[in-house]
Image 1 (cartoon, rainbow, N blue to C red):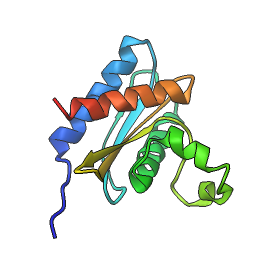
Image 2 (image 1 turned 90 degrees about the vertical axis):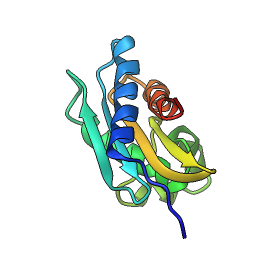
Image 3 (image 1 turned 180 degrees about the vertical axis):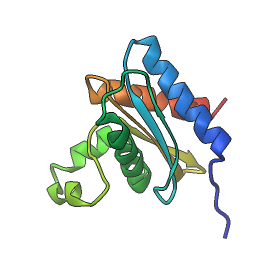
Image 4 (image 1 turned 180 degrees about the horizontal axis):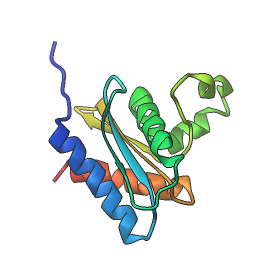
Length: 133
C-alpha cells in the first residue's frame, strides 16, 4: 500500500498562498492545512483575523479532506442529509478545499474569516493551486 502525504514545506506553501490571496483583497483570515487523517499540519493566523477564524479554518479543512469535496458543495448535501452537520469536528460552510493526488484526498485547506464562504473558498483554492506550481 502506498500513501501520499504533504510535507510541512508544501503545507506551509499552500497556507501562505491562501493567506496572500486574502491579503490582496484586504481580507483578514486564518488558514489551516490538515493531512488525510485530519491532523493539522500548519495554521497561519492572518493579522487582524477574528478569534473564531482559527478553529473554523481547521474544521473546514478537516471537512473538505473527509469528503474529498469543497465545503461549498457539501453544504448542498445537507439538504438531503441534515445529520451530516452533527459529525464532530466538521463545519459545513464554504471555505474548505481538498488536496488530491491521483483523485484521492491527501490533505485539506481551510480558510475562515472573510465576510463570505465564497471568498474563504476562493482563498483556499489559491492554496491548493500553489501546490501544482
